[in-house]
Amino acid sequence: MSILVVGSVAIDAVKTPFGKRDEALGGSATYFSMAASFFSKVNIVATVGEDFPKKYVSLFKSKNIGTEGLHAAKGKTFRWQGWYDYDLNTAHTVATHLNVFQNFRPEVPKNLKNSKFVFLANIDPELQYSVLKQIEKPKLVACDSMNYWLEHKKKEFEKLLDKVDIILLNDSEARQFTGEPNLMRAARTIISFGPKAVIIKKGEHGVIYFSKDTHFIAPAYLLETVYDPTGAGDTFAGGMMGYLSKAGRMDEATIRKSIIYGSILASFAVEDFSVDRMLEITMDDIEARYKHFKQITKF
Amino acid sequence: MSILVVGSVAIDAVKTPFGKRDEALGGSATYFSMAASFFSKVNIVATVGEDFPKKYVSLFKSKNIGTEGLHAAKGKTFRWQGWYDYDLNTAHTVATHLNVFQNFRPEVPKNLKNSKFVFLANIDPELQYSVLKQIEKPKLVACDSMNYWLEHKKKEFEKLLDKVDIILLNDSEARQFTGEPNLMRAARTIISFGPKAVIIKKGEHGVIYFSKDTHFIAPAYLLETVYDPTGAGDTFAGGMMGYLSKAGRMDEATIRKSIIYGSILASFAVEDFSVDRMLEITMDDIEARYKHFKQITKF
Image (spheres, each protein chain N blue to C red):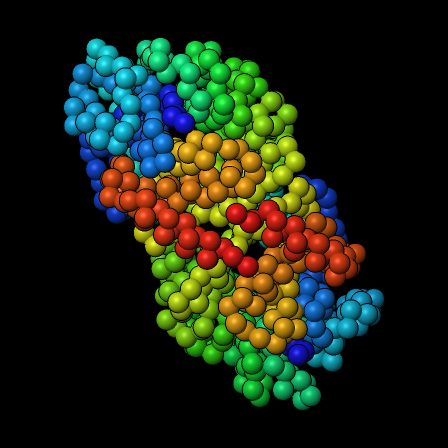
């Protein structure tokens, strides 16, 4: 089943201790759809400016990523500039130019309103909500957010929580939103707002999946070289949603597998700048790493 | 096979957001031996002062922990006072009174010199080395350390590394010692000094075990309530060494199991102050949590 993702398509300038890259393809919807495209057809709903390189649109198309909902607006593309220190867990923002993203009012193309798998990447919760209202009968809705919205649009975010199946937050966001330092209790509080499950992302330390009755702890795949962690969370979500939509089931075993595939995709993504590493790998590489992951976590 | 542990037996005063405890039984050898005692006979080599409560000596004996090497010296017992914030990963020291520990020159009782499993808890690497020289033919030597020794006695620590089988360090110590932010490369550097394996402890994020050719990633058991993280690392080591000495084997599968048992013991220990929780639980509780751990990490 095909997936709809709403989020940002951006041009990034990133510097890490291992190099730098300018004019790189970035944005949450980009990372998400590149990862998901290994498993399923993905359609992007996003906006870009007149400066957005045509080669990137061609790139999406070459990966079977639908760009019908990629709106070309007057102005410049969303641009983010940032850097990471050796502690690659924290992004330091130098500049954020929202540009055309500032006036982004996501419109789901008519023929995509029946999308069954929907990922609401990190944008204003009111916009995320407006997208949901355009989807006829989704089978699975997952949603991301960030500290800014949790602080400034808490009510809107809470309203949205009741409408999604899986909410993804990183550990500090989960703690911030709930005021609860313990992740297990934080997860329980979040679930009390309505979602079926919450996935707490801990960066290099992996993720924890909580449903009402169970939880699943997955460490991150260990890497010797991390070049650029930008987009790891969205890549994770893409791998996970991609696998789920391909499987077409949402039982516990399938969800756990999808989480490992998400981690595997993220582990590849951070091995190079932008989405470059995802352009190099094949499904065989993904399966080989999945198998290795199983081997190094088995007891 | 019985285990010999050399380290501290202390009296702690600990404060966490969830309560406080004075005159509590603490110290690395204490936590280690309490955990290991679920699996094997343990013998402590440590020193205490005249103020050390007799009830604690009786407590050791009641758990089949040998106190023959627990030297009663003139003066006061080692005392540590500290507190933790909601971020229970970091201990804030208020006061450390080494007292009799300052002149501790560990002497292994004659009849324990043939101990097969040896744990050198965090003390001066020169003293750790002196203990090793007293042991006739150990089968497995594991060793802990801390940032202070890695900085001030680096050469001595490096010399020791060549003589031990497993070195346990927390992630920041591994990074500090090697100057390498990536844990995989840090582990490889550490192994180049001689040990067969290194276990990097990441607190609430679990541990990573590295041998020359393989690695094993184990998340921590997730808890809803952590009361006092003091001694978690030594408890982990105790559970691990206890299981290994009981098993009497050191193949990869046994080592992995021992690491999970170590994590389970540590997860119990932090549920109350001092070693109190370990005094409440039975082997059945440990096995039940081991089974649950398997269930929540399986995919």
